[in-house]
Image (tube, rainbow, N blue to C red; front, top):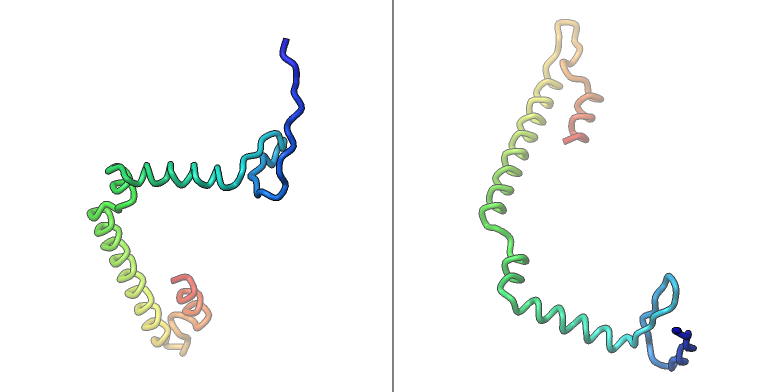
Length: 108
């Protein structure tokens, strides 16, 4: 049969990472930091890391082009709304009220 052993007392002067849920596991901060650092540097040395961290130039260019098209469309829409706000009906009412223009500006 297995017998439960009393956990050894840890040195409280050394910073530890401790399991927040059960508090059943604790590792010295320096040990875990060194492990994570080594794992990270080992991964960064691999060609796959550079590929994973470097954006695809084609995708970036396509994203920029799409954003520029969207911006141009917004600018055109805003220009048209401003022009409508300066045009009036025969009764003297603006084709686009100041409130509507303000809403368009805030939306865009």
